[in-house]
Image 1: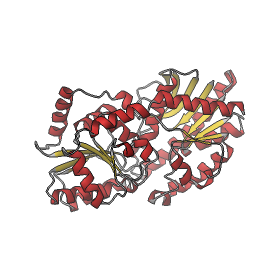
Image 2: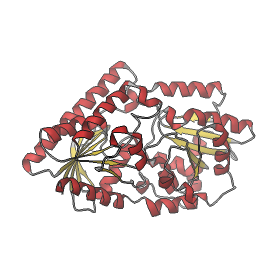
Image 3: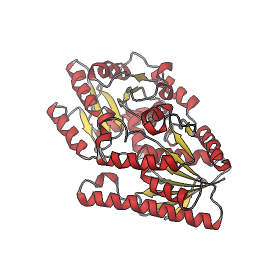
Image 4: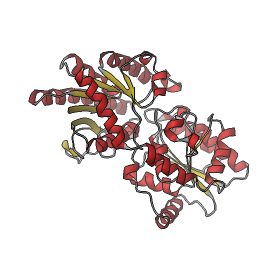
Length: 405
């Protein structure tokens, strides 16, 4: 099967969950009978425009780091990058199709919907639309202009696509126009970038722990919690900071490192910084205001006494699975699907709300000595349930349906 993909991220190290998905899927597809061509955005100016990644051909569209888009000029640059990505994606698929038939175009996320619509209407190629998140339809994030544009493009491509792939059944229930459709297929993903994050032995874990803790001046005996993700309201970041205040007031000796940024709404960074200052947590909560690369993120998770991701909404949850694969004792919020993170099998601690009254005891339990086997159960669950090879095989089976139709 000859497949063209258009996505907002291109490996190596694309940002966010969608970029993580593309890296993992391409790795899983390497062992499958498929010829894959990907067009995606890349933040690395020194990489070639076209190269190979695993068994896929990748064409990169250069963009800036996302968190540099705080100014109006930066926002205009982001819009320009959106236009370029869709134009280049359509053009590249057209060129491929002229040389040899493209069997299917896989479009990832609504930001690539214009390219998908062009391929379906103008090139008459079967299109599979991957909807990775319902964020434009649920929660506070759905009130923005960006979300409104996302809903319009989402609906438009959903009407034209031959098939739709979502990460879980919960995504279907959150998007009104997917209800009752027989051409929507939930396919669970692999465990994010866990395949690039080797789990350390005890000696390496101790060395990494000492290095990371010294970076933030965390004294011996203080428990280290690590969060990674966007500083967005639905991620529970405000409640997490407030939980640290309550935990410390209750006698727990804890510190928190928060890797991430609020992009595309970078005002979240400033608001969260103000909240930390108002709660007098400057020596306890370390806001990085940027994403970490894969190796550095892995070291933070390895060094943590517990990792915490208290999201009220989460389309899948790669970062939690990555932490669990590294044997980190992990706390997740109610936005995570129980089947995906294995909370009912005691692979992690899952709270039913994002409120500090429930988060605090979960954080204290996970970072303490009450359940020392929690990390081992987490790693076993991820290895047993989240293989990228299996996810890639299921994805190809769905693609075949679109081609046959």
